[in-house]
Length: 132
Image (tube, rainbow, N blue to C red):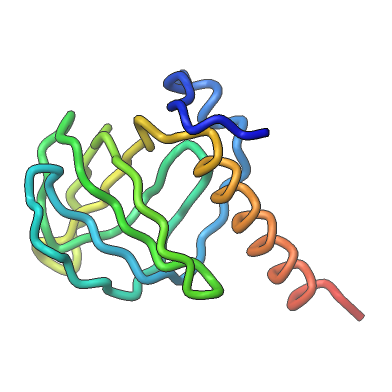
């Protein structure tokens, strides 16, 4: 039976133990303190059970804690917190940044839900590109 207690923070090495895939998802990132309902925007997201990488037109400070909402297949609304690890400017287009963040304070059941969806994304990708 899955626990609702948060799992320990994965180290940098452990984050790379999770399978990563880039998929198109509806996502909303906003400061943790912002309690307003954010707008979900469909974007390409590099996601794993450890965190995400995403290209944005908004700058967030390193170490900031963000509220992350994802709309997963089957209309599953997934919410978690994200710690900003790095923000890299992208030269073109102007005012574009690559945000790298890791999930924090995530319950074991939520991480397992995310892993199940990532495996499904991988299965769909393999079927689409490598099936006869």
